[in-house]
Amino acid sequence: MTVIVAGAGIGGLTFALSLHQMGIPVRVFEQSERLQPLGVGINVLPHAVRELDELGLRDAVVGLGIETAELAYYTKRGQRIWSEKRGLAAGYRWPQVSVHRGRLQMMLLDAARQRLGDAAIVTGRKVAAFRETGDGVTVDLVDRHGAAAGTASGDLLIACDGIHSTIRRHFFPDEGPPIWNGAILWRGVTVAEPFLSGQSMIMAGHEFQKFVCYPIGHEDPGPDGAPRQLINWIAEKKFAPDHDWPREDWNRPGDPAEFLPDFEDWRFDWLDVPELIRAASAIYEFPMVDRDPLPHWGRGRVTLLGDAAHPMYPIGSNGASQAILDARVLTARLVESGLAPEALRAYESERNPATAKIVAANRANGPEQVMQLVETRAPDGFDDIDAVITAEEREEHARSYKQIAGFDVEGLNARPPIVRVGGAAS
Image (tube, rainbow, N blue to C red):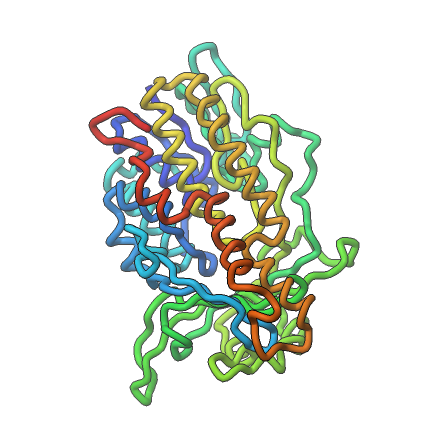
């Protein structure tokens, strides 16, 4: 009785830890020879931190990053449109944590190896194909060169192998590449002095040009003794969908000359955007892509999880959080129904429509649409934000998205655990 997991990302590792918590054997196959703390910053929202808390990892994830206490939207001139409290400051029982993606993945990997044993996490092996065998699944493994590297068998196969999932392509061979919306993201991290509260996440600009930043860790003080933080930032420009750009050149080094001039005058009294960009230790570039929601996530004893199932635009800070929720809901359904196809279909019937709504909301600019509304109504700035957009309208954008994404404060605080250790799952 074993579950095979393809991919040791945030979703795959959270799922493995959740299965172990409930006494279900699991083996994880990861194509990378050696996992490293790669990537930039992400936000882990309160509903996902709750799940990590219930895995005994709350202190670990909080210790990796910064507890976000405020989210604020600004215009391209640095005028505040809307701000709201986040995490514990907003009344949640769990914090929102801004953290380096690679550090979070390494923490989950270390926890998985400690709890499951090293043999349960196999690196340098990719699940290249699979076949059902009546009461189980056998996978064909290859090494990083594509050479055959044996097989493995289990009761179920869960694909956590990302937006370019091999297993998703098995079910939907004609789907084609991810869908580009015309936006290019340049992402970097910079050591700098704290801005605003030191626990603030900000978004400035509008749909066609935007800057996002937030702290993801504390650094040693500067030579003058001033506090410093590791600041994650994203500069975004949107082009026509037919713009000639290397869409599939993923995570290539970014050239500041291609975007910095557009942000050169974004110097606010609370943040110097061009200086933050110039001081980055490294810059990476990639297109903003997603995929259309699927009619199903698998057949028989196979299903998808995380970006393999529902890749979404990085709007609303939901990608990693939704993968964590997938992992917990699937675990709960397996506890209820056993390692059987009906458990996978029950999971899909719950998570597929829920995540499809988020994909659609993110395509409509999610809660960030409030910035575009202000840009359209007051492109030259304003003296009174309430004359441009009412407080009720601003609040509604924030409230409705939280409900769609499943982290409205009252609902999250009140609902029972997804996975009930020692009892029935909800």
